[in-house]
Length: 361
Image 1 (tube, rainbow, N blue to C red):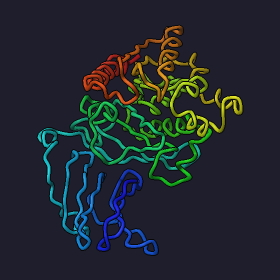
Image 2 (cartoon, rainbow, N blue to C red):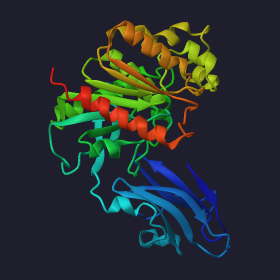
Image 3 (spheres, one colour):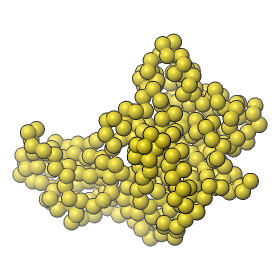
Image 4 (cartoon, one colour):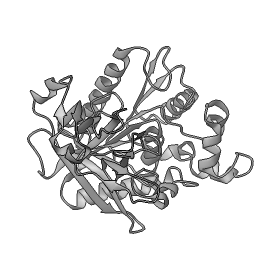
């Protein structure tokens, strides 16, 4: 949640996420309620208020699935829906057809409602029997929503333009659904979100939206953890594209730069809860994998130790599962040293999905 403390005119202005929407809220004092400001559906970012004590003007970045990010300005916080667009940095996207999408909800195995975003292939909004790509966000404390993204990390729009129906699931541990939903990932860091995601796939197939014979999956960072786990739990996915995801937690705890996070999510250190480190690790179930798997990593990654990718590749090769590891030199977790690396990543992942995801046997 971003915030900006302004002035006596409008008080505190914050961004608040509720489900797949991020809107603007304000609060005049600690004794008054938080008020949602009337605004467009979508995602607001980087709010800035005026230093003028009597002004209620505000600037912000706004986007939605079919509206790329631009900067907007309004003199009166009460008139956000009349805000003026100040920039046209992404106007090129508006000259092209963009995939349409909407929120999608389903019940998980324990009857808890889970939500995600669906992006449809171009010209196929709300059509049926579509090839599915499940793109899992990282975090886990993050969420996918009604916003425009077309990067190497959040590339659902790109996949949809290539003909895939894309499900972006906000599994247990995602933000925007309350504290209880958020913390249910603790101790079950892959198994609980994994059940939520598989229930979403089942629901899409049951509703006739996804083609059960053309299911694929992928994600980066925590999304890579979950991808690696899920292909040990089912053979239904024809292809997987995973990046910077761990397959076990002991060596990763000892080699990454957020070891306290590992211990927090797993309920203790490796010697305190060894069974937890075992039961939530894909490597111990890797012999069940049949899904052709493409892997990506930066060779300097210490957020998720790059040795995890080496370990996973060796295991899959030993089991004769089709696999490929794409290793980017001098890159850490964010792949921000060379802009071509992100482009190459998405290009190769799309090729992998096309090569294996369209198989009929």
